[in-house]
Image (cartoon, rainbow, N blue to C red; front, top):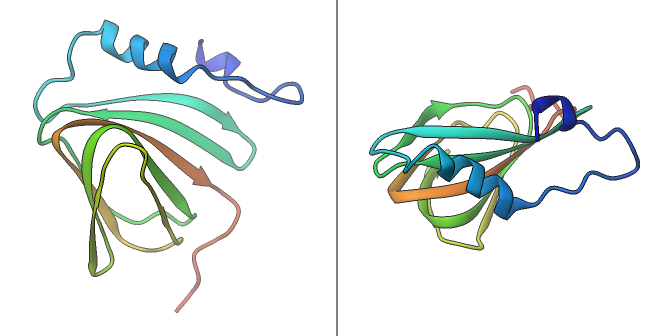
Amino acid sequence: MSSLHRMITSDALHVRLGAELEAIEQGGPVGPGARVARTLVKTGTLRVTMVALGTGGAIPAHRSEWPVSVHVLRGAIVVRAAAETFLLGEGELLAIRAGVEHDVTAMGGAVFLLTVAQGEAAPTT
């Protein structure tokens, strides 16, 4: 599926996650420390991206001005959000409020869905 077909142009968009995983894997194993991402949905205020991290791969600390969720499909990741640390395994989901600093690290390689709900801005403090 090319990026041109990732918008919801009708009433619904059906994405086969297994096929997207295969597409990532066709490039070979995600090497240690590497990161590969595929945008699955990019329309209006919704973004869904499949992210694969190799062993020790990481997304450094950052903030999103919108709420995000992380849903682990394979492997395990450590997410640090604000003052808490979460170990997430397959089938687990973590939602993070807009404006909260967070980072992600894969222990032994992992694949997860990152969803960004644009539109609800971070609270100002």
